[in-house]
Amino acid sequence: MTIRDIIIKYTEKLAEISDTPRLDTEVMLLSALGEENRLYLHINLNKEIDEETINKFEKMAEERLNGRPIAYIVGNREFMGLDFYVHEGVLIPRPDTEPLVEEIIDICSADEYRKKETIDIIDIGTGSGAITVSLAYYIKNSFVTSCDISEYASEIGKKNADSNGVSENTEFLVSDLFSSVEDGKKFDIIVSNPPYIRKDVIETLHTQVKDYEPYNALEGGEDGLDFYRRITADSIDYIKDGGILAYEVGHDQAEDVSEIMKGYGYGKIYTKKDIQGIDRVVIG
Ligand code: SAM
Ligand code: GLN
Image (cartoon, rainbow, N blue to C red; front, side, top):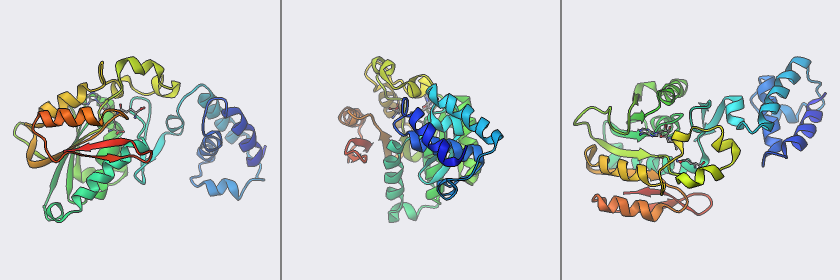
């Protein structure tokens, strides 16, 4: 079989379960070939593929047909232009989360932050380390403390910090919200993409989310807002005067989360939209 044959055959097959069958096919084929750039496929369409590579590819395609997310199959996902190792047990970083990171990078580019020797940031619920690592990477004078209740997530976050060269300005704590943070420590910026899916909605999620991604990364209680209430309440003890609390929120939660923040004395609250025009980020 040539590269072209495989792309045609599997784009058709994977269309049964995926919205992006051609991209999925190409990403798995590249991984089986040990190549990185899709251009390689396009300039080698007539190349015959050896049996070992075909076997590797077919094993991945089988997993994909069963619903396993492509990022877990190939073991990585790009986020904010950086490469993250991912595996079952950590949420796959989403483009939905990039506006939150971009907004914080933007805030930290202002003079008052640039002048600081260190901007102390804490990320609650780190998962793969997507937010922590990209903030530490793009904000050179930051130190990012990362908390996750999952020991495995903490390990993966650390691994991604190492591979992206930010182990010096990050630390990873296994922690129920702020519980492992040293007493008296205060932060310039508190950031979180907490679990925010309503309990009754989880069952309706796509197979590749509900059967493969960690439940603990998704479920936010009866109304989806449990973590916003808990984190906002606790944040008061850990935020510096004039500090910033920044959240990613679900598609219909911006108003409720703003109200929660107001209730704890946060002011200057504003939202940012994602690419679909949905209020996705709430800052106070
Ligand atoms: N920050 C990552 C991202 O944006 O891709 C992952 C976000 S995921 C929606 C939420 C994370 O919160 C999961 O990694 C989960 O393990 C963690 N988490 C859940 N309950 C927690 C708790 N009580 N304390 C700390 N982290 C928690
Ligand atoms: N955006 C994720 C999803 O809908 C949910 C992540 C979260 O709960 N923070 O699959």
